[in-house]
Length: 230
Figure (cartoon, rainbow, N blue to C red):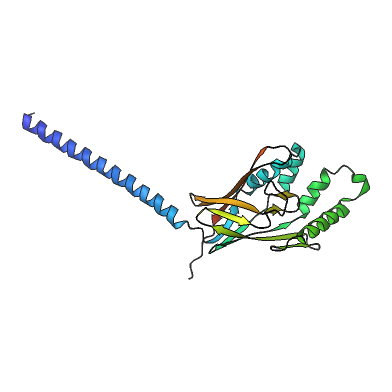
């Protein structure tokens, strides 16, 4: 093979390599732009629905220091638990409707004095407790339906976008038993928020009053996609 042919082939290979490298660079740039675009489009405004609920509830349970069997039975009672979040301007509404019955039954299963009350009567007492709790709120909309067993909770918070925080004036709580903060149930609480990979994270950290242990509370939400009108 002549020297000129060798030079020509070498030149062609060099050009081909440059095209491949340029193409890869362009793809990486495009992927990066798409990722950045996705982050920009995931704005805070709109409606969100909870995800990874059991992980969130576990974090609420941990500061209670409950025993393993209690933890397991209570977690099972919340397997269908869902939360909704709606953001409008600088106001947020966090809400959930929960059938208290599974929790009441789980509570009765670990109750030591079963010989003193039936499960049915015990459940009614739990309902009464949740009903009394719902009446303590002055700014939230909270209610307990003793006939259906449904506990309805709607908390309003104020958003500070410069600090990326949400302030809840009467705290956050899952039923009467599980406040999602280290303070008293109705104490004001401030949650941080951030959006990562399309998931909205609400989280707060603190130290338990009695044990002095660190506590981390976290709720995750994905944005509800609006259906296009046909």
